[in-house]
Length: 68
Image (tube, rainbow, N blue to C red; front, side, top):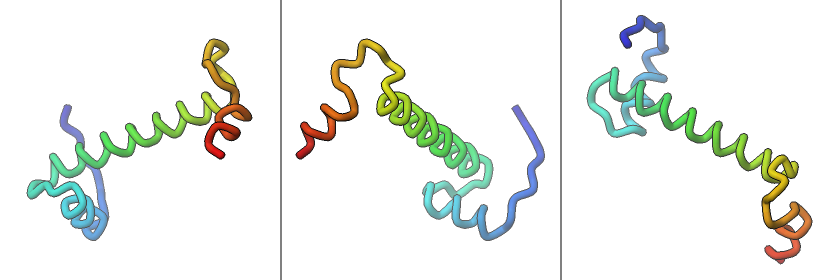
């Protein structure tokens, strides 16, 4: 899908640098994909810690005790 977006030049340059992409489009796609992946992982971790998965084998307290 093609869209038009307004991105600050420095932010785009930083995105290209950190993603290793030499073209703008792939850099934006890679950065967006990574952002979404991290947000989903954060959300999953929050759900696990809050006990949203009833069949998860360990509670938050058990995980913390295990790490000690």
